[in-house]
Image (tube, rainbow, N blue to C red; front, side, top):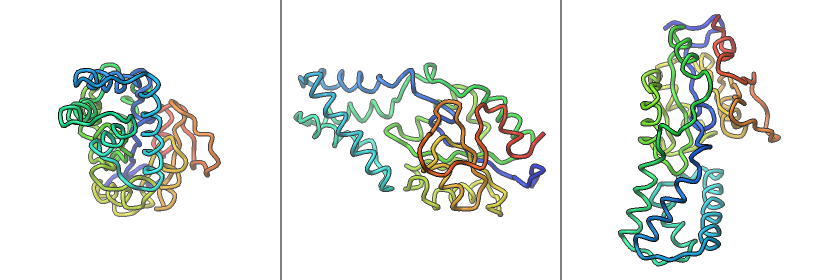
Length: 243
């Protein structure tokens, strides 16, 4: 297998805020849930909705940090309870469907320069994967975003938490990527992502080169930083020893 001059043979990308951001579409899920509630005869005030969604996100955050994978169905069930509305099968199905439908991919913001960077990495002989902590939008929908923007074909393998059964920084999700990409030596792997707690700590724990991408979101937390910080994907090839 070919590798860069520093011995890097494969690289994995975080998804959110590394490949894609939902910044311009963040309120679409709420709008769809409101529509689902109304179409099923459920009246809810703006305050009740806001309170219920805040509780749901707090619950999701706890489970994410506790490495307990959340399914769309579980999130909907919690949200319905948190909003204190009467549940029904049509309402539940409509809310779950909205998560599977996701956002309009044409409105998703792709990280600047990511297409050229993937092309350069692929031309340099690197195996390319994804390691992603899935939120409420399932991985099949996330892959469709990449396909819409002509990026999915660059990836040789992906390790989404809803498929693997754990979140970063669990070593198991990194092992899944390593095996899927066919790279024998962990030291020949790099991972790039925006979060220190999950991306950087996870990569370091398994002996990979850890790169923090700050082009869409700059993590200022107290967790240790990456081996390098990448502000634009045009810097990525050099960071892994290409060029």
